Amino acid sequence: MPTPLEKWVHQQAELTKPDRIHWCDGSEEEARWLMKVGMEQEKINGSPVFYLLNQNTWPHAYLHRSHPTDVARTEHLTYVCHPDKETAGPNNNWMEPEKAKKMLTNLSNGCMRGRIMYVLPYMMGHPDSPFAKACVQITDISYVAVSMRIMTRMSKKVIKKIGNRDDFVKGLHSVGDFNPEKRFIMHFPDEHFVWSIGSGYGGNALLGKKCFSLRIASWLGYNESWLAEHMVIMGIEDPEGNITYVTAAMPSACGKTNLAMMESALPGYRVWTIGDDIAWLNIGPDGNLYAINPEIGFFGVAPGTSSKTNPNMVKTLKGQNFYPTLFTNTALNIQTNEPWWEGFDVPAGDNMADWQGKAWVPSSNKPAAHPNSRFTVSIYNTPTLSREFDNPKGVPISAIIFGGRRSKLLPLVVEAFSWQHGVFIGTRSGSETTAAADHQVGVLRRDPMAMLPFCGYNMADYFRHWLRMGSKMKNPPKIFSVNWFRTDEDGNFLWPGFGENIRVLKWIIDRINNRAGGRETPIGIVPRPEDIETSGIDISKEKLEKLLSVDTREWKDEIQDIKKFLDSFGRKMPSEILAEYQKLYNQCV
Ligand code: SAT
Ligand code: MN
Image 1 (cartoon, rainbow, N blue to C red):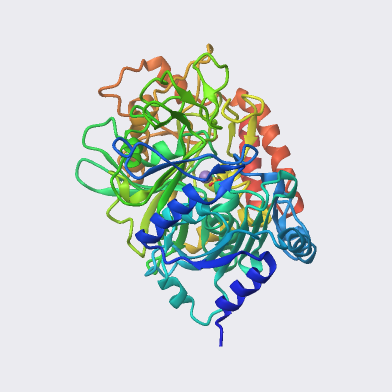
Image 2 (image 1 turned 60 degrees about the vertical axis):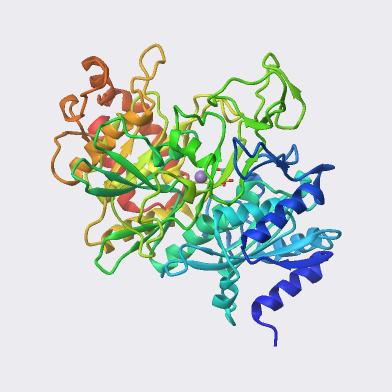
């Protein structure tokens, strides 16, 4: 008798018609074979899937060039197919599930002809963790199979674990013909199923990542009393050796990965990395909140990564573990056969190829690496990896931080008055756009909890779920907001950022331990200049005062904009959030 898993794989093969099926076991030998298939057999746009890079300077590194139209997540083609539109909410594209499946069945008919179907059994979370989930993804390209092996715990043991069960997490992926017109990323939350066609890019194709671990997992969390969040998890060690664990949610281009691996500028303090993208948060038997990172790799943005901005990531990328390290759409120094991107440690060479493999010179007025070029690398290479990383129970969380890029208005750091006030801060948080993405620069986009593109159900219900979670915990974490990006009148950053951010984290952990002062303002508790450790840093008192100032007159426009945003979720918006809004309004207007 075939198992439900075997039956499911067989059905997908009947539809997609691959030349053959390969069940992956996650071994090193298999990874070597996958790289070979990608270098010698499979093609994208007539070119190989992988190129071997300089193995002396970049051990186990390979370059991948995507299809030129396939360089980022495609949010407008991403759907969450709940039975009714209201459950998906105004924050998601929605299609009636049967209609979506009919359309995808047509697009998938024969889409794997001439290709290998890879069956990838993997866990999100440590296999011994009560919070881990057994998953299987099907794909038809070596790049995705290898990337999943780096990002998740892929092993044939998962097949045993699934056994005769039918409720495993399912993902069906095909690159199709890379046609952006026929590209869809469809989620069926009640079936734990993601169906994706037409793209090989990270979040569109590595279905364990944003698709399952955030969109579908957030829906599971809503129904099962836990949270799936777009958050960094890190431990902060103080000079006495105590480690405080915190999570932080930030939209892209706010330095989330750099924060997770920060090299502290304050002597005696260290940051330990647990995750840079996704946190699953569960209430433990002791009533405290615990976090696990369901992933085991980084899928990070290359441009701007250097020994100055993130020395630990550079060490990670050059690490010796056997897990191939992939560079996607970076430039290539043809002379040295090394990857290169804007902002890296060394200048561009004389003989360069851009991300599409075309000749490039520094005077070309386009960047050589794609602005969203990426690396995929094992977290086990990280010099700052926390020793709790593989702890199946996770780490106890003492603070939750919401970050954003705001040139005005928001102080360097604010502590919420309460859990409810903190949820309001998360709800109204957002970030100004940067030049890295191709939209207008400096426009504020609200992105509650940095989850707007990733919440797999109605966000008003999600806010209610957050409020409910707070009341279930014995000691809910304190909630903070941070903003490293406040500028002066001339547009210069007031705060040096990077390793100096530890000074802000120090205030946060001192607040948790009742060791630091602060002053009450209408928007929360803000440190006074003397509450921030400034030994060994050259920052004027005026600058620090400006960084920590709250001017209620400036908040008038902001308050109107917050109201407009809250209203966009309609009558489902929880009254507790509206009450917090009203308090802010009364104090500022
Ligand atoms: O594609 S990912 O979601 O993994 C990365 C990103 O585009 O934000
Ligand atoms: Mn992310």
